[in-house]
Length: 118
Image (cartoon, rainbow, N blue to C red; front, side):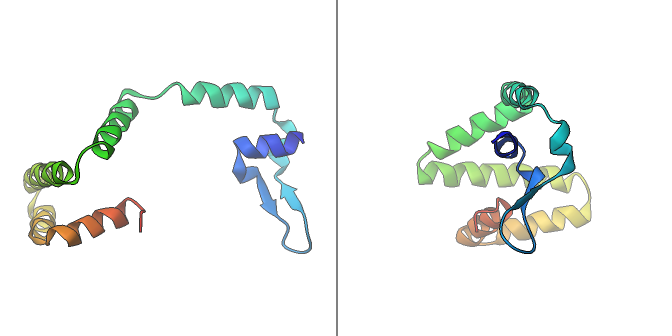
């Protein structure tokens, strides 16, 4: 039971056996304390950096926006990114220009792929 609880906190220590049934746990699990791992997990959950908090807030705001507002926000963001990339040099700025020329539905598909939603 202790190993299963540790594996719920650290899935990387558990894997299925290659032959037969059952699971195998990494040797490092033998030295792990369940109480220490729980307190570490709780502590990490509440120690978000300022940039993580800001990103989380933006994600929440974006999810609550109407589709038309989302579209407007994406247009503005892409224009700002394009301007930033242009200031970095010709290779990157050309990519930004190509992305801006894409139809809106293709840009949305591209962003979904980049975010791992497709």
